[in-house]
Length: 353
Image (cartoon, rainbow, N blue to C red):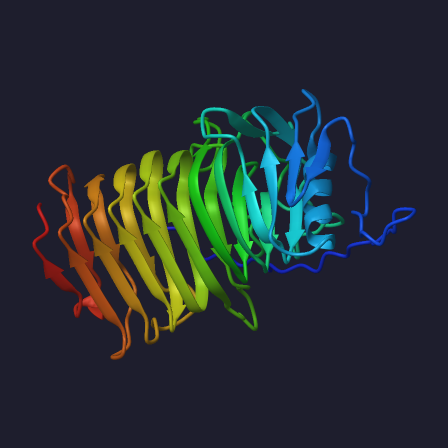
């Protein structure tokens, strides 16, 4: 299993508002390049530059937030090259022109402040998209990590002596309501990477781990998407009063499709997914809490090919529920379902092993 992670996460992004002469419309802090960014009604269209698109993508988000909710940021067909994007309280849609038509790739060797902390433009972290608050859809595009070392050196706080990384994390949703669908997240395998890939997680939702350990809430729904070439494709850690739904996705060339840990008043559904993993399909664990509290763990109708199918390594309190049903694990080579002593209350129903 993975080491305990100690990562402070959270951010406040400041938006500057400027009045356009003759209008009262708010503009983004940095002006968009009109050759590549234009607005039609409630849609902001962004065209790739074939160079560095960071400023234009960031500007489109800032513009959408500054001018009110329910805007759509539309990435036109092509390949966008970007550094880290920071978004706060976006209410709307961020969509490409299709998984096969719009691709976002990282700029090379993105700078990450080694001592971690709160992600912001002044404290860059390994998240390509850091999404704080808001209520949005994120859809119809491919996000691809390129290069053996897409970021500079970084480490989880407390693990500097044992675990250092150059890997990228695709998306960091924090205290948010996110619907992610028809998105492909693709990494590349590299023998020199700590986990063997240049992507650590495709999507990583994390409450602050450390002395005070405040969790995060909200809802995250991931559907009809694909994940390839990542250490852990999805991770949801230290969640409270949250809903996580992962359904109808494909996971290939990954160490593990998903993990969830330290849940309080949270419901996790992992259903109708197809998984091919080198280590395990799905795992639940406790890293900082003695037990999950009043939480539902539902794993159903998945096809899993891996050495371990489902690892229930956590402890659950008496108010938590667990159902593992109708999963096809006939291609699992070692342990289809592992139940720790604290997860013996899991209901197993009609799983094919």
